[in-house]
Image (cartoon, rainbow, N blue to C red; front, side, top):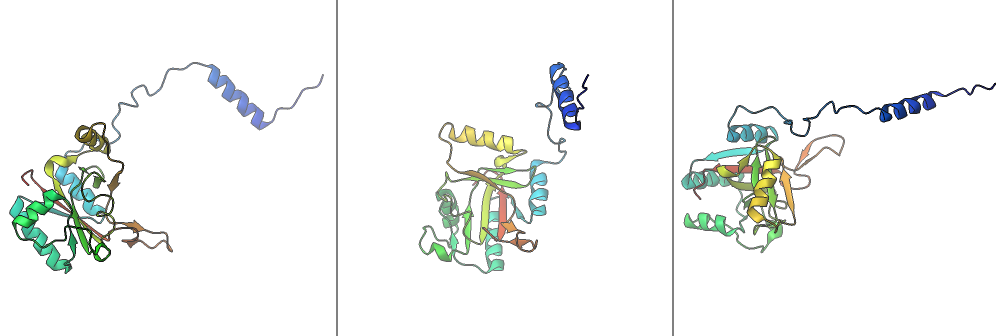
Length: 215
């Protein structure tokens, strides 16, 4: 009688088949409902500021309209820039009220030094900003200028990306923007000799001005 010698591969496959034939209860029945992260004890704005600055972002808290303008003037003087593009009517109205100089069209956009936009949400868990092309800034204003300044309201703070998408769905319904993405700190790459370089594929500096819902 010939006894066929089985290989290690055949024995392994046999064990897999036997295991598949045995019905077992799911060892993790609550996996989908289990939280991915532990609960945070800090307020959302504190968590966001901590994570955002850890990703090389610059966080500025403003307690009202005047604080926005004061901090913006100080920042622009510090950065020494003059070609600041603002395309969203809501921001234009705010800045125009205080006589702040800005460029409100895409003329000479190739020479833009900074941009100011709004956002969809601030995601506290990882310090990210969710943006879309639904506003007047479109796809370009948050990507091309080397300095990107984001005006955000406290009500736009959420803990996770899941809640950020819920906000977008509630805002736009079935007419979702064609581009929704998140930004985590300034643009960066380490492709060249593993040296971290900021501003490789987008803004080199990123600022968030967080204000209470009054503008």
